[in-house]
Image (tube, rainbow, N blue to C red):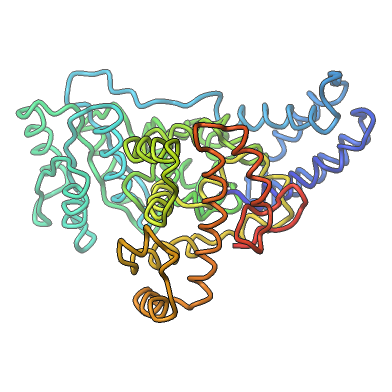
Length: 464
């Protein structure tokens, strides 16, 4: 996410590292690079101008603390201004009203609005512990109602059935009455999208808004449309009293223009960000954490929260006890660890949140391929349980059967076995809970040719 912008900014900050102090000359030189990076990231021009002016005012004459280098001091200023542009803090949904609290979803066709309705309903059900009902007032797009019904069933929330013969106003009124009757906490109304902004669509959604008087009116927009996302959001905001924005498809957005432009142009906060296709791939938008990611400083808080939610604690505890007793780390354990990693969005998602990614050589982070780990899972799944627990019994015929069953090559299997042996060595160091021994053992995993951890610190790209 925002890889291109991260790479450009990291290069600019590195140039300041060798400077003795922050001066007007070296700051202006750095700002020219930052301006170019933001424009290439498709950030709206008024946003870029305002941002550069504010950074310049704060950075010139900035006293550099003894504990900070000039580069670090400049990064600190840039980070503060990035947070200010995107909003000082996460803007939570306001659901303090007599139930049902109505959320009206607006947006153009193709932005992922219906999918986002399902993601938001899952978030409210699991994180906010609310009972949720969803309804589709989209009577124009073929199968829109059926799509929402399927998604609602998948995430386990109540679906109010509607029909294309009804008017959006009638659908909304009936859904509101049903939500009241069933004492539902939140009613989410999915509205019709269009391929472009038109008067008919605006009139329809304005009428719906007046009828429902929703407590939240959220605009769903595709992050990959860059500054166009902010301009479209402004057009909707002029017609509707929006309360917030949801950015979708941010995982495919290497630029970051939308995230940096929306708040400044519309004056409305980004409340959520969509980072994948799965139902749980919707996160509250924290400007400080996103600014940290853009600057290559990681997002450890989000990583910890994700681990808390998605890592199976029971399996983790069982593995810890098993290793502590010295009972080894077999391929079944390895497979479980790979599955846990996939649950957290895969290696690329985890790396995106890890500190220090900005120090990688340009393009290095893009070389990480999650398909390699899915291939490992497929190989282990093609083994019998005995082979997983005792991989030493794998002879030529067994290996052929496994690779044919998983659609892989013998080289892939041998590489997996080599990586497993490396992990076993590290796990042996943990016997008895000796963490210090484990950390020393990590030194043996620095050889990427042996399938270990790639030596990022040496500036080499990762090889997976």
